[in-house]
Length: 207
View 1 (cartoon, rainbow, N blue to C red):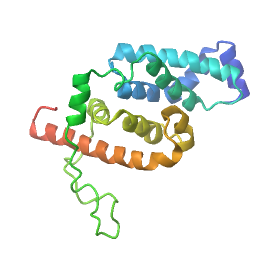
View 2 (view 1 turned 90 degrees about the vertical axis):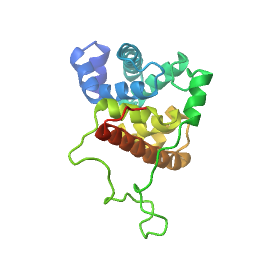
View 3 (view 1 turned 60 degrees about the vertical axis):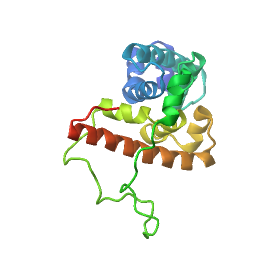
View 4 (view 1 turned 90 degrees about the horizontal axis):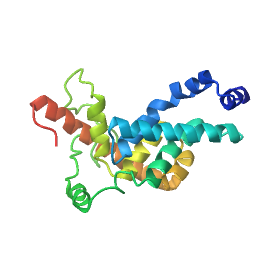
């Protein structure tokens, strides 16, 4: 962050706040919707507003914190402090149901072990109708079916484009341990989104 922007924030310049929000606000909302025990709009707005207040205070006082890292870290910290992270707030029954939910089928998504490109995406296999674009609700539902650590890392690394080093203090997962977890999250997310697509295509109700 530039010194000029820091000065503008310190003086309460609304345009400076708008500059920050235009870049990172949507990511903070996405993260709160994905990991919160109450992903409804009112709860999301409340925690994101508090995260922005904390972030602006840090930006004004600190030397040069990455804005996105500070904001997304604040969202998770506030939700954790309030007991509003999805897994933390789960009842025994809902936790059991989540653990018993069948793993999504990954058949056909990735090339088989005996292929020279094993593990890579199989571009010739897709059950998505031509031109189908997932809705925001379908994406959110697919993400929320992941384990909390998986969906958090998926959003921080793939959506927010944080580095492994930047994501480590926010998630508590060391950089060297993120690769395996992130690969698993990506595979499961794609498979869950495929289920969303097939449910829509067949007219079946979503689970």
